[in-house]
Image (cartoon, rainbow, N blue to C red; front, side):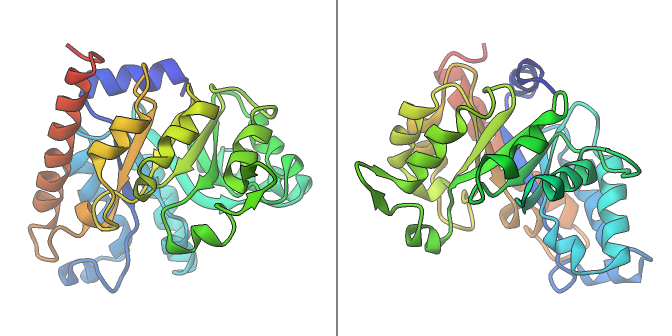
Length: 277
């Protein structure tokens, strides 16, 4: 999916909501456990309930890998269930030397015998350019680099001062030589607040994947105040707040209500900023 196509979907749906598909067998409604693949059934119902109000889905691969073969099967089939016009992110946080990164890219970008065909994959940039560039060799596919994350431990490294700049700023500036804003996005956590201003000084045109709204306490209003650009430039993710809105048989209905509440707030923000009529 191109940047223009993504922005077109944002304007059409009046939304920049990304739903995190992170199914945990210990948390999904118990009645789903009677299915042959409870994770797949859970995702199927969440997607059916929310597809018209979100523009992206982000399965975190850890929730599938830990279940062995059934988990991988659920991830593959989940990818097939998502409508073509919706942006798909494999939240895999990969990153290794060149030949290994090539195989990771093939895994998620329908290379070789892989049946998965995501639009984007999250990548850790710590090993440098040769761990990232193989992912950029796929047409109309995206790398989403970890830049300034929403977890408490982000300050251990990301905020460390190196000379006149912080480590996350070095990551942003160095990566600009690797690809364009048609290929690269960045993870910037919603709990980072005013630091979005510093991020936007370096990458004003890039899309940002923003976790941390909702359960982690991030503010959508703050994210948009500092992070929105003239093509929206944000994919704001909510996982637990939507998919676990209920643990009963009405879980999909409640997930839709939670997603719709966020989408309506996003619509008002887009209207206020003149991005939609």
